[in-house]
Amino acid sequence: MKQLAEVHAELGYTVYTDTDESVLVLNGYTSDLLSDVMGNAAEDSALITIQAHKNTVAVASLIGIKAIILCNGRTPTDDMLASANEEQIAILGTTDNQFTASYRLAKVLGIVS
Image (tube, rainbow, N blue to C red; front, side, top):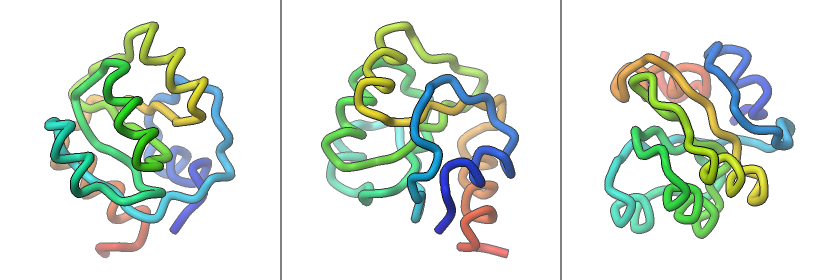
């Protein structure tokens, strides 16, 4: 478990939103299928995906996901950013692929060594 500020500082990913960085991130979930995310992702986690649109934020909001990490150099759309700022969900971006981002997040959270 780490504060969002620690997560993004250790990962060095781009931060696109102005959100509360004191929120705790407990885990992560990797998927591009939003119905899968709705059924399996945990509250207070970070979603690792390439889905860079506002529907991703809507699903994250329903579950209580604290951050969305966009992989493969994807950048958020303007409506995604507006929605994320409104819902207080952080959007981070990386050129890492989803496998690498998942491992790096798990390492930062102390899930793997």
